[in-house]
Length: 148
Length: 148
Length: 148
Length: 148
Image (cartoon, rainbow over the protein chains, first blue to last red):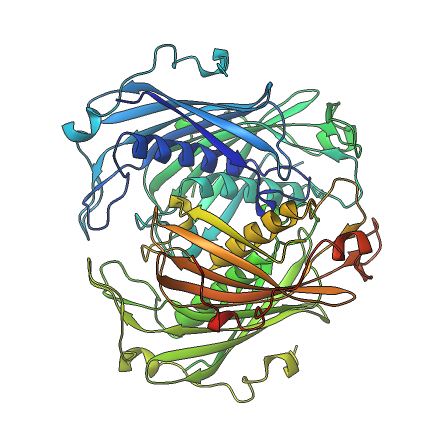
């Protein structure tokens, strides 16, 4: 029952912009990569072909502390901050060595998506919610200190 | 002295993901498109070749109310929420017809970026800050009602 | 029965990379935008929710003649180069004013995609193929001269 | 003096589109990732802050044989196909297990890029060209058989 995951990643060329640093929209994709790696660690895939359950985002937030540059190696530390009946919330901390790069959070909801019908909020299936544990202290991502 | 801008946009195929809706990371790019259109309306470009002043993001936030799908036409309404000596904050509301799609905010800082030196926060040049006005009520984006 | 389309477009910030120019992968997305605009002009949408027919790419090619930079305005000229029973081929020319920026081509195939089954090549439905005409001379995109 | 590199990669969620497969534009980014990994293996970085030498693409080509889906693990095999005084050409083969996914090629040129001046083609510095070897048989990527 994982409650956190650490993803190691290298900045790719196409993730940079004309300012010479990683474009801020990429940080949200880094968060998602870490989330899906956490799900795999829990023995799950967040998207299975043909499945009628989806997990769209309700909210996403990021604070940018220092820039990332081409070929930088960095870590995305995701923690499960909260699990409710119909939502999960993660907190994130990205670091490059000792440098805090960014911190943030995302909240996902569980929905039923049948072709031709609007998405409808449903309970997270027990077989999914039961595979994760809440990480102590994850509610304060900015205060989090990456233990290396 | 513009304080807001309305960007009309159509969803592109490559902005969708396997869930059949626009990937959430794109909403942050839509925000940026509206921001830069606002700057053009103010007679400015946020990035000029050779310039040593940049405007990286300090924070970005988005709440997702309803999905966007391929070829949907939607509006991104950006308003200047606050201008301080070294930062600007925008609030956003995205709508498709009468449907609220997303709301959010971003904060940018003004930095000096000389080759080989770390970025350093500086005051926003008067010739830039003086081109924008704060939009009344923009601090409450979620409550905002798009006047159509 | 359109055989060509001209898309006007402005370079967005997130399309640039650290070299200060548009990343080459974006040219393929520009091509796709023009293609889908052509389909709309033909009264069609290349992707309808629930449809079991898709149009994946078989091949894509691009030659890069001159860079595009942030906020550049440019044109993507798409022409239908060939229609066969199961494929369509487009040629592209991108220009910024008088400057040739890039030229290329893509080939799409028509496939049947039923959930859980592999994609299978099928004939392009008559109601689709019959909506397009082949553009004379489109087979030689590089030689094409944009009539402005 | 490397002449080839094999990059292992997993498909990310944001790389898929509404057709449920990886969007074709991503294959060109996968090629670039493999290229830059090859450069690192040669002890080089294709982009160094402050450098006035760049390597834009002259041409890129890809043929798509089979789709990639979310979380698929695949290999990008890059080989140096040709080195001339001012250009380098790579051939690529992407595979998922025994399945050929895509094959392609890109050609890069060496340019001098001084602020405010147009890019100008120059010779590839000897310290760079001398770090790579041409891979025998790489001119025929489609015929290439991945030795695993």
